Image 1 (cartoon, rainbow, N blue to C red):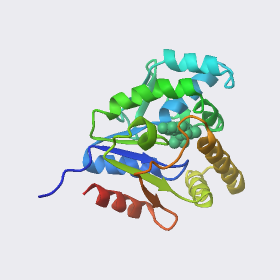
Image 2 (tube, rainbow, N blue to C red):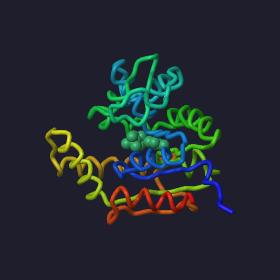
Image 3 (cartoon, protein in one colour):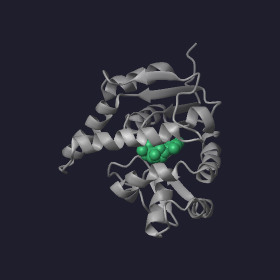
Length: 226
Ligand code: DC
C-alpha cells in the first residue's frame, strides 16, 4: 500500500541554499501550503527601517514584532513571488527583499523576543499540517515533531555564485566577492546566535547541493516524501 506523504515537512538550511525555490516546488507538487518563515523576520526588519526604529534597540524591535501582526498568504499575483506578505494591509512582498533588509535581518532575527513572538505564529500554522515550512530552526525549535526534516546545505562559494547568477540574470550589476563576503557574514550570525542557531536537527536528512542542480534536489526530496 502506498504511504501518504509526511504531513509536516521542515526544510532548514543556510542563506541562499535554494530552500525556498525547492520548498515551493515540493509544496506545489504535494498541494501543501508553502511557508517561508524568513519572510517574517524580513517583514519586522523592513517595518523597523520604515518607522526609523534603531535596529540595535532590542526592546523597540521586540515591541514592534509583538504589536504588528504579519500576514503571509498564498500568492495573489504572478510576478515571481512564492507568497504574499502583508503588514497592516500593505503588500510588502518585494520591499522585504531589498539590500537594506538583507543587511539588517540577521541582527533582528537574533533577538529572543522577536523569535518568541514569530515562533508562536509559525507553530500555529505548521501544526495544521500539509505544510512545507522553510527556515533555520523549523526542525529544531518551531516544529520538532515534523514528520520529515531536511537540512539543505551547500558551500558558501556555491551559494554566493547562485545569488550572483540570479542578479545578473535580472540584468542587474553584482560583485561576486561582495556577495560571498555577505553570505559568510550571515552564516556566522545565523550559526552563532544564542537562541535557535542554524544547525541540522539530530534526525534531519542532510542534503548537500554542491553537485546537484535544482531539479535533482527536488527529485531527492520528492523521493523522501514517497
Ligand atoms: O531565509 P532568509 O534569507 O529569507 O532569512 C532571513 C533571515 O531570517 C536570516 O538572517 C535568517 C533568519 N531566519 C531565522 O533566523 N529563522 C527562520 N526560521 C527563518 C529565517
